Length: 318
Image (cartoon, rainbow, N blue to C red; front, side, top):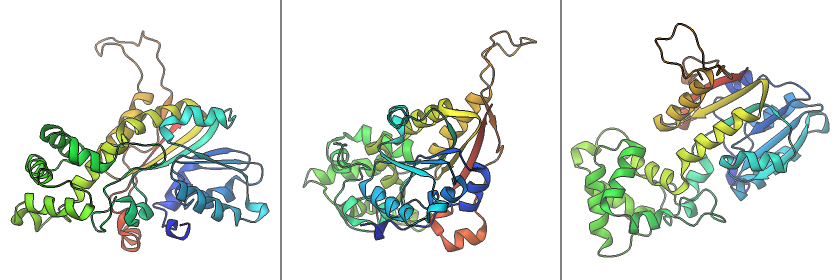
């Protein structure tokens, strides 16, 4: 299981540059995964620093623990791995008795090992059960339940809103029609339905025809957008003055939430725009460091095609 969780960290050098970690600081990797970013961050925190890793995936914890334990003592800060969802950041950090944080990293979306693991059903390229839960031990809603119980209007809504799929309504209608014959239980079944719903001429461009729908179903199953906003807002509260929030997103819905949270912290004034001076007294708590997102270099995309859509944004606590 741990070997399956080896993956290439996206924008690694850029993340380390923006995190600006130093010995004796406290760093939270809110999306630990296989510790691809944290293994490098750890060496910058030692000696005397604290690394907190958060992930809800049991396999990620096993892989990260194995890798971090391989660090020499001189390169190892105090390490604490927390099992949970970063949407519950407040509870997790209170349980770890952390007074404040100097840097957060969020690397959003689904990790490569999760996509490649057939039994999780995340991938439209591998056949597996329609699950898509990030934390199967705690979550009850599965992709199969969404596909087989949501009405056509709700399926259309989530596919259109969460993926900007042009053929959302048609895909939803085809799903409803096919499940009346028999339950849709595997990713291969769903892929075939999506391909049938999208006209052949539209399938010839824009990548795999099922990519957008699978993204939308995954977001719905895991409440990803609501969880992201909650987690980012909590991170802003926990940051020490001068602390940094570094976020990598992979699609426009995530990126919009990241931009909005950072902008809200940088511009908290609620006064009418025609007032000559601010009278509400709400001061900024963040400085947006990246006016435009940092994106991977061509060489990185060639090495790791899954980095292609990555956007890195940074804010600093005032």
